[in-house]
Length: 301
Image 1 (cartoon, one colour):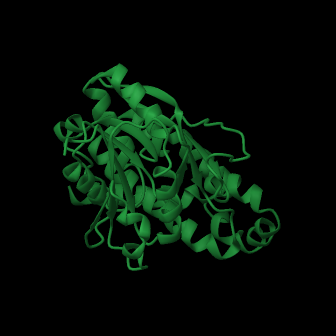
Image 2 (cartoon, one colour):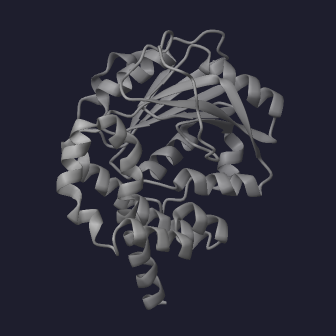
């Protein structure tokens, strides 16, 4: 059997129901090049291995103990047999032209660029063939692994994802900057559309959202340790201007926690507003973690 042109890597952890929808969409492609789908299971315990989609001829399922996103994505690089590797998150539902869209860009660009697809946030699963929502992607993220393709050997030569990123956040952008250093440019694959399911806010989700921001803050400290540049300081919010704005918005570092009782009630009545406002309001939890780890690093050096 000849090697596939594309290796589609989907990493997952305890998302069986969502992964099933993701795979259904990936198995419903039109005009796609030869491809394999690698499901890298980062230690799921929710019955993921029982999904019937994992027994499709083009699907391979690899399970390993939970080691985090970077380790799982690196496992995908190791396992990939395709000339090109396309990453898709397991909470993304792709359109029928998704793989064709990435392949068209990657074939034309050769080894000079990677393909960045279009990612559309939706609050609930949609039908990829008839989503019923506008296709808009305002993000300018460089190398967003929700929906991206690149030559497999370039990922290997770049060293893959940094395993120091053991929690949520920044590992894809850090690798993207290394790829940029190698001369790769970003090209938009506008036919490669993926609908990223980001469920609407519920009050009981607040502790999990706070922990996500704390993890992002801790990984920002790792990012800054790897690249202590002004660009990364701007990205992670570690500048004097960011700190001053944070201080004002949080009432001198008092409001983020003190205000949660009434904010929780208001957001429960306005979940759509919560979806847009909460990330900014929760950012101080991450900033505090970043500063704490940077102080510890300076103290120990």
